[in-house]
Image (cartoon, rainbow, N blue to C red; front, side):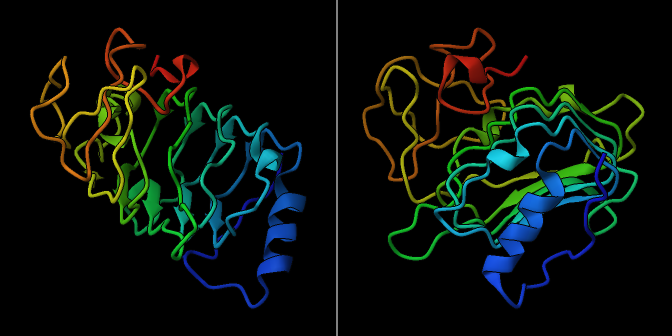
Amino acid sequence: VCTGTDMKLLRPSSPESHYETLRHLYQGCQVVQGNLELTYLPADADTAFLKDIKEVQGYVLIAENQVSGLELQSLRIIRGTQLFQDRYALAVLGNAGPAGAPGLRQLGMRHLTEILKGGVRIERNPELCFQETILWSDIFHRHNEFRGEIQVETTRTRSCESPRGVVVPGRGLGVPAPLGPPAHTSPCAGPDCRALCAEGHCWGEGKQDCQT
C-alpha cells in the first residue's frame, strides 16, 4: 500500500527529483490509497516502477508527459473516492512530446475492468491510439453516477496501424470500421482492433491488449 499524491497539474521544480519521487512512491506498490498522478515524465523515463499497481482508490491522472507508454498493465480497478475536477476517475491530458519526442502512444491498461465512481476524459494526446475502441460503459460500475461523463478525443497527428497493417480513417465511437483498406487514408487515421480482438476493443496493438 502506498499513499499517492494530490498535486493536480502543478509543474515540479526539478524534473529529475520528480521522477525519483514517483519511482520511490510506487515501486512494488499494489494499492494506491490516494490518487495516481503521473505528470511531466520525460521521453526516456523507465516506468517499470508502475507495473505492480492493481488498484487506485482515488483518481488516475496522466498529464503533460513525453513518455510513449506507461506500464499500467496490472491496473484493475479505479475507485474514484476522489475525482479529478470533481468529475473524472481517469484523465489523460496533454501528453504530447516536443518536436522529435513521441508523446503517449497507447494506454495499455489491459486489465482495467472497473471504475466505481467518476468519468473519463482523454484529450490533447496527438500520438495516442486505440482510446476510441474501448467500451468504457463496460468498465463503469452500474451505480457510477458519472457513467455519462465520457470525453474521448481522437484528434491525432499520426496514423494508427491496425494489427494486420490495415489503416482505417479516424472515426467516432460506435461507427464500424471498413474491413479492407479505405479508398483514401486521412493523416489521422484511427485503429481497427478486430483482426486480433473478436469484439474490436483494445488498449494497444498486441493480442494481449484486447479489452476483456
